[in-house]
Image (tube, rainbow, N blue to C red; front, side, top):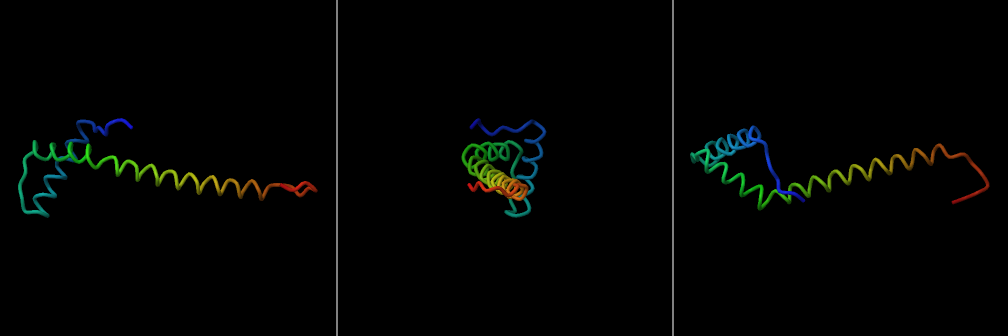
Length: 84
């Protein structure tokens, strides 16, 4: 897996959200530098867990869709003397 990186615009949005969270939820003001530092730390140390969860969720959806396709193909199958 490559490192989790964000565009400049994404970093700005996320940084503002971090600052807003600290202000509203923790009643603590943090600067842009501290918020970006927190984002970098979080992405590096915790981001892989979220990334992997996304992969697991995508895999589960794909498996369900493949199962649905298998059932649809089975329904189209014509009766013959041959059995699988």
